[in-house]
Amino acid sequence: MSPCRMKDRAAGIVLDVGIFLTVSILAGLLSFNKLGTKTTVRGFFCDDQSLMYPYRPDTVSIGLAAILSALIPVILMAVIEGVHHYQSKRKGQRWNHSKYATTCYKTIGVFLFGMGVTMVLGEIGKLVVGRLRPHFFDVCKPDYSKLECVRNNISVYVDVGDQYCTGTDVALMIDARKSFPSNHASAVFFGFTYFIIYLQVRFIWTRVHLFRPLLQALFMGVALYIGLSRVMDYKHHWSDVLGGAVLGIIVAVLIVRFVSIVPCYRNGSDRQNNIKCTDVNIRPTDEDRLPSQEMKVQVF
Image (cartoon, rainbow, N blue to C red; front, side, top):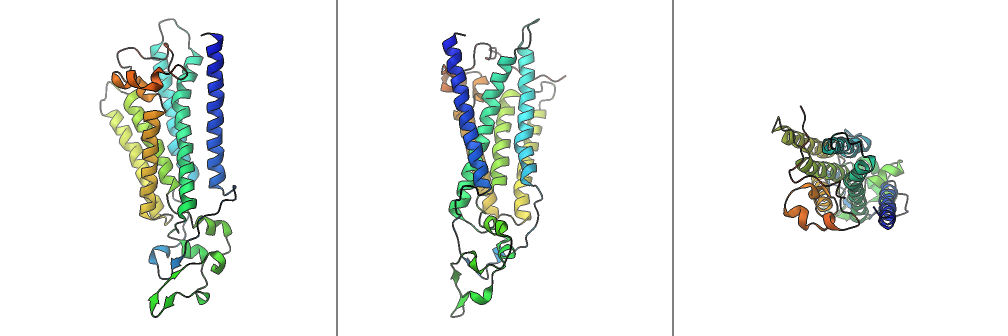
């Protein structure tokens, strides 16, 4: 590789890392309310039964959701790419650390970038929509004596902020206004949708044909359980979870289709016509490309 090309590639990697860090930091700042942004303040009906559920701890914490939806796929993708790299070596050839790192960078790095984008979009949705969580009344503990809940024997919309809440946990009251969409759902559905597509392209156990679909069904089942747990814990309305799932799936499909090089490992027109596979700055090198016959991860 010429010095100019190496310099261009290094500059591209630095810019990519900078973009990834920016997205990650922005997602973290939005999640922990460190940007000074205010959530849209919605009112409520005092007899709204959908807001009367008790506050409960998480069945699946955000940390556990992150491990399941991000860390486990990253580890498994690194292992699968390692197996591919090992199988593609010529006899007597040494392990090419640069080639392996490049492949991981173009698959796992894009995956983590997509996860950050999903979280940022989800947090923006929470701030803009400001939907109240099902346990809002339990956290807010509104002073009904100061509210006009009924007018002419008709329940009326109370358009007030938290000044009539008697709850003492300010952080919980702020969070109680961030129901839509569910970031648990968006994160796990992004992570597992991306990984399921990745498995479809890069993992085949030739001895057991149904092993791959079994893994894919398992991961999708975990995503579904985590989403449903948010409804069972009264953290979200069912439509919040649905919205988060749709967001995660859409971002995953777009990232795979237009950013990731995963489709480049497929034979045929997908690989030949995809600009990601032909652009000089990001295309896989000749050593990175798979032979004409689809490479398979063989487990004996």
